[in-house]
Length: 331
Image (cartoon, rainbow, N blue to C red; front, side, top):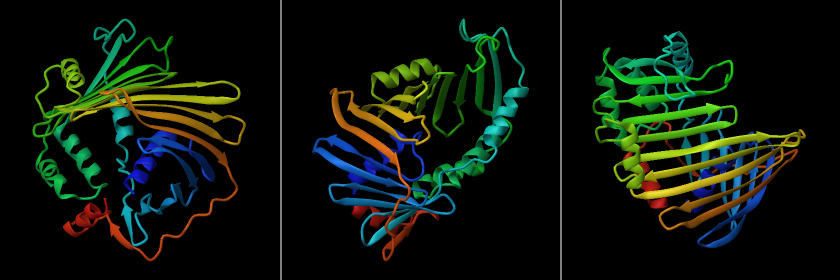
């Protein structure tokens, strides 16, 4: 079951831009156990993933959640992905209204800058809205308490946007988010966007940060021993026949160094067929852990099995000790 869940997560990461309703997806997964065949049926009601005569089935819920069958006797009800209604729109409005500084250039390309500060009140409200959307596990209780007790007008984060000459580069910008709230991890997010794709860096650490470039370099040298670093880029190209999306990413955390890359090709003939290849590598040993090759075709009907007669672990209202014990024993 653990292997099937890993394949499901890899599938979501590999093909999220290419999935559409009513798709039959076939392919192979190659890892330490050798090569195995995959068959995925992906529809508007849910999905099935078959590998080595084992099946992982899921049903989408009306509220966006997922009922996932873990065995014939047990399934788990997962909540919908976190939503922060209106936050992006509010942030965009703040940046639009922020003054533009021509003297705060970042490079020869980025010659204008805007910055807004987020108060403790804004950060706490944003954090609590995220926590309200995920299971209330015991490990999150200290964070919830900190956010509930925090607040005020003191700056806890900044959002900075750098822009080039918009007449020459209208689709180009550099966004930087920095969180430096007391009691919370230091967080840095950088997004460099243009018409061809996005370069991204996400870093977090509990250690005090005085310079993020130095901190990120230290995380790279130590494979994320004192924090977490995710970095990479996307590249999108299209011609008259197909759209090609390339994604490359690195994950450094707790001494682990993983590298993931994938090529996705989506037909533009109206059928929305696609094929994709991906590989996950351990950079410490330069060893390929998994390779994945998938091909999809649009079909008229996807028949999914019912998920009935099993014990349901409801994680939409939190995780108690009994539920945690059941899940631990299963995996």
